[in-house]
Structures are given as C-alpha cells and as structure tokens.
Image 1 (cartoon, rainbow, N blue to C red):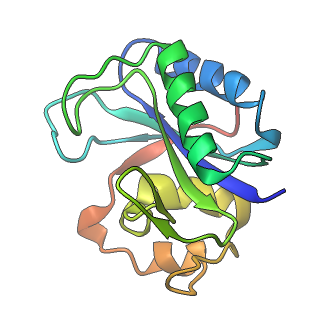
Image 2: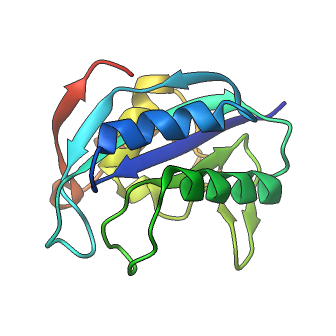
Length: 164
C-alpha cells in the first residue's frame, strides 16, 4: 500500500473538532494514521479571515489517487464544509500532498500537490512526521524545502499543542 500524506486545515467554528472528526472519518480508508502537531497560521490568499489550524497526517491506503480524492471530498462534506469562494473560510480543507512518489497532473488532481513547497503550514507538519521525506519533483527533503522557504511566505504563528 502506498504511503500518503494529507494536509488538513480549518478556520471556521470548532476548527479542532472539525480536524479531529475528519481524521476519524479518514481512518475508514487510510490505515495506520500518524498525526502531526496542530499549528495556528495566518490565512493566505484572502487574508481578511480568521487564523487557521493546520496539521498533516501520514497513512496507507488501497485507494488509487482519483478514488482517494473522491473519498477526501466526501469526508469534507460529512464534516460540514461549505463552499464559499477560493481561499475563503473553511470548516475543513483536506489536500492530498503526496501519494508515495507517484506523479500525476490532471484537471482534478496534481500529485505531488503543486503548492506544498511554498507553504510552511504544510511543510512543518510534514517535517514533524518525517523530516527526511523526499519531494519526488525536486529531490529535496521536506526539511530542506522548509529551510529554504522565503521568510515572507511563512505564516505559522505557533503550535497549538503537541499532537491530536
């Protein structure tokens, strides 16, 4: 089974509760879930909104990438995600960051996630799960990507706690 890394974020309502609920639902089809600490971060894109809580998980799945995306979208709906506007507030947002070293680019899904290298709120939780995790595109570790991240793109305000 491939190892997958998913990033989770929330900034509406009971953000921690939404993240916990999403992880519980994800465990139906993602086995052996390990969870990174939760970070509080400033919103990107549309900045006039509440801060986010962000984390990442690692696990294994039998689902192929397209089916994993459908499952992740179902989990978002079950948790109560309301579609507003791009970069807007979210009850829950779940992104597939890595699916083993698989590469794919379609209208619905790009793997690895095309923007994870630019986001400390994704890189830090990934680093907490495995700092030596290698980006199959750049060949760099998550730790190396985080170290070279432009300080202007860093939005993490701090850690909420050690782990879920």
